[in-house]
Length: 438
Image (cartoon, rainbow, N blue to C red; front, side):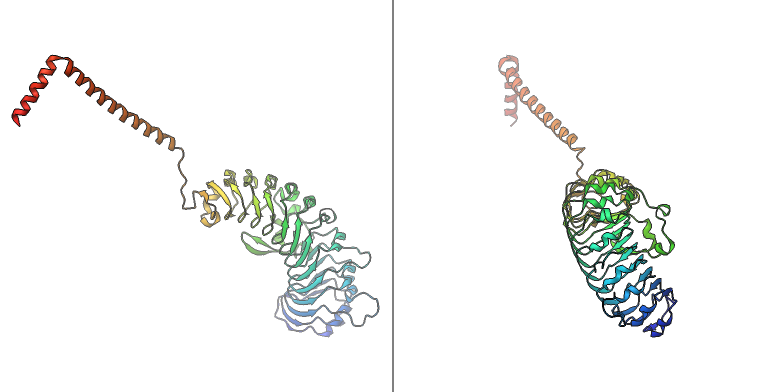
C-alpha cells in the first residue's frame, strides 16, 4: 500500500492481523502516533513506514509490567524495519538488541535523541545495514556495535556523536563496505586500523574535528584499488534494493540507492587534518571521488595523482598546498569536477585532454602563483629570455666597436695632418678658401 495518498492515523484494527508478515505503508500521508497494540503483530518480518508524518515516541506495550523487556522484544521474527523520514522522538528502547533476526534497520531523519542503548546481557547481532543519520543521537561511538560482525553499511552521519573513532572498527566490523560518520563531533586521529577494512568502498568522515595526518596505510584499502562491478558486490535481492546513502558528489549532496554498490570514494573534508597528502593514496586506482578540502594539508599534490584512473571528482580546495600542479593530472580522462582553489599553488596549470573542458577559472582561484588557461594570467615565456639578452649584448658590442673606430680614425687623421707636409698644406689651403667664400 505504499506510494499512495493514504492519510490519517493507523486504526487499531490492524492489531488483529496476527499472521501479518509484510507491512509496507511507506510514502503516504499517514499521521499521528503509532498504535500501542501493534506490538501484538509478532509474526511481522518486514516493516516499511518511511516517508510519512508519524510523530511522538515509539510506543511501549502498556500491558507489559515488571522486569519484562520493552515491547520491541515481541518482534522476534522482524528482519527489516524502516521508520525513516518521520517525526519520531525520544530514545530507543533498551531491548532493541534482542531482535536477533533483524538485519536491516533505518531510523534516519527523525528526532531521536539520547545515547544508543547498550545491550542487555549477551546478544547476537545480525544487523547488516544500520542507518541512524539525521537525528540527535549523542554519546561516543556505540560500543555495542563491536558485536555486529556482519555489519555491511553503517550511516551515523548528522548527529551529535563525539569522542574518538575507535580502532576496533577495523577488526570487529571487518565486512564494512560503507562507513559514514560525517557531520558529528568526532575528535582525535583517524585510526590506522581502518585500512584493514578490505571491503570498504565508501568512507565519509567529513565535517568533524579530526586531527593528525591522513593514514599512509589508506593506500592499501583493497576494494578501492579497482573499480566496483556487480559481480564483486552481489548482495541478497531484498537487501541491496534498499541500500541508500547521501554523499557529496561533485560538489552537491545526492542520494544514492542501489547504484551505491558501484561507487567508490573518500571524503575527509572539513576537518583539522594536517601534513602531506600521502603519495600512497594514488594506489587507489578505483576511486571515483576524493574530497580533502577545508583542512590544513600542506606540501605538494602527489606527483602520481594521474594514477587515479577512474577519478571523476577531486576537491583539494582550502588547504595550504604548495608547488606546482602535477602534469600527470591531465591523464585523468574521467575527471569532470576539480577544485584546487584557496591554496598556495604556483606555476603553469597543466593542459590537455579532459582538463581542457574545465573552463571555470574559480576552480584555480586564490592561488597567487598559478598562471595559464583558464585563468586570465599569462605565464612568462622563460625560454625566449636568454635569446633576448644575448641579442641586446651583441647590439651593445656593435655600438662600442663603431665608436672606437670613429675615435681611432680621428686620431689617425690628426696624426697624419701634423706629420705629413703635403697634407698640412692642402688642409691650410682648404681653410683659406673657405674663409674667402664666407
